[in-house]
Image (cartoon, rainbow, N blue to C red; front, side, top):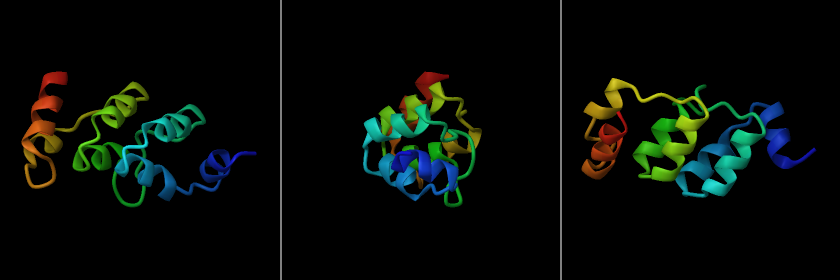
Length: 93
């Protein structure tokens, strides 16, 4: 069993969140392909929150492909997202 599969089985999300925050989208995709949830909270927030707050456009798209949804508060909270991210998210709607 791989490290990714072990993390998912143990519900260990730290490396997944770290991959999102560090723009390691190949690793984000591997977690998602192996069954990591794109919609459940990880370390207190949903994965898409980490992608938005770290400006990771690629992870936003991957997470949405795997079921994550944009919530209204993400589009209104300029303290956690840059103007560029907000414009990008709005363009997806």
